[in-house]
Image (cartoon, rainbow, N blue to C red):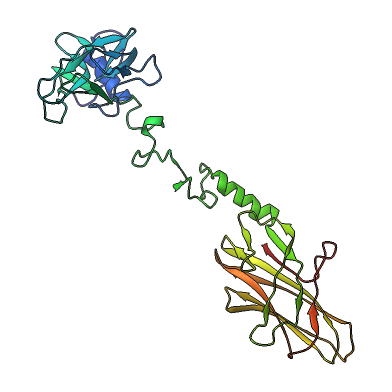
Length: 361
């Protein structure tokens, strides 16, 4: 028959019956059983046919299953006995057997071969016997039993439903991932999908980047006689005015640099105030370096004329693209050795004087 439909009233019109038990079994199997050779136990119903015990008899708890389209239910514990092998460990099986001739589905056992290391094979012959495995039963010569769970759980044919037992790589469900990225490694918002769900880490980072404007603002430096060669003396910033870097920006106190933890565009800012104790036309140069070598920006300020207690100041703000782990340092240099030019410390009430900040844009 090329085409057929089920179920209809009567016994003669169109695709009407009479229908056999096999007709109904085939209907159930095709609709509800994804893998005919395995699918069986109904999850969450009674005791799910869970087995327990370390010696014979083994207890099989209550539960229900579908075996090749036939519904099976056990509403009280069953106790299955196993003989002790004489010379080597033997692996037996607890199975559910559909007997076409007897028209029953029952729990029973299959006996393996001593020393083979493999369980007996289940029979799956349409129209005669159809068996599905429930547990492997490994029995030592001392009668000690180890149970290995072989239950497979029923779910709709040609579709996948998440359960604790089928979570993980290879399941085809991505139940342990979000938008294809592992929870432990996802660092970004989920992709362009109405159904993708970002991780907690990704959500936190998104909020930090878009709304908090991550920033670390350091201040409080005091340098007497800045260096005169190269870039001069690396500036230290000993106090924190603002620390909202979160997981985006960090401060390395040992090497005195601000570091990007996330690739992107940032705004780097330096403020400088210095005092000239004596002399004429004194000059201060502050250089902002990326990764210790690349000049990102420079401040060049100087006094005009001379005298003592002359203040010079300057400010630099420059956008800079940083990759993850790129860092910025500030150096100060004076124009001639022996000049009494000092870079003064700022206070918490005036943190902008001699300060260094990095802000995510």
